[in-house]
Image (cartoon, rainbow, N blue to C red; front, top):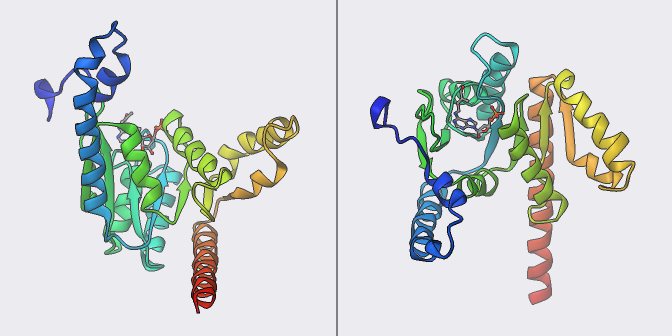
Length: 247
Ligand SMILES: C/C(=C\CNc1ncnc2c1ncn2[C@@H]1O[C@H](COP(=O)(O)O)[C@@H](O)[C@H]1O)CO
């Protein structure tokens, strides 16, 4: 939808903002069907995607910015390494990564989100799905990716980064490489995580090992490929152990 057809509120807002006494009971049970349909649509569309990496970063980064151009190159290299590229399907770093993946002949996925200032999927998305609920969309970013690369961004980017870190830290997903691209941008956060969060015991120092930091596209791809291969080897070993135990 565009211009006057764009609604002034979103489905997510209507779900989260409704606090009236009891009236929710007449609507929320039906919303469950809609939420369920988002999971079904996402699972069906992505089930046969193959190995993929989710790329995140600011919706406001413009073409020509060094990070935009790095995201284009990174996505191209990821395609050459055999990965599809998944983004939020919007502008900025999302557009850059979709552009790099599409131009390299790879699968360029955009998981769009309904927003009050709707913009639609960027022109480089080849496989696109539109979500109404952030939480359904975030499940797809993790479930169908073997790792994350995170470019400089704002609240949306940090939300996606910390969701992934929490899932890895709590063992909900295993061996999931998380690469932060842009040392100058991320250094302050990494220092704070180390000198305040870890120092005050809110995370363990080993949790910081979950994150790699680089300015180098090739290095980012190397980290992704290395950790992905290690995960596959561990899975093969685990399957072999199960098979041996069953004999
Ligand atoms: C703000 C602008 C466009 C918003 N359009 C978006 N489309 C899709 N996904 C989005 C959008 N905005 C945020 N996201 C998600 O959050 C991450 C970026 O957020 P940040 O706050 O900009 O860091 C991104 O990875 C998306 O998944 C254009 O002005």
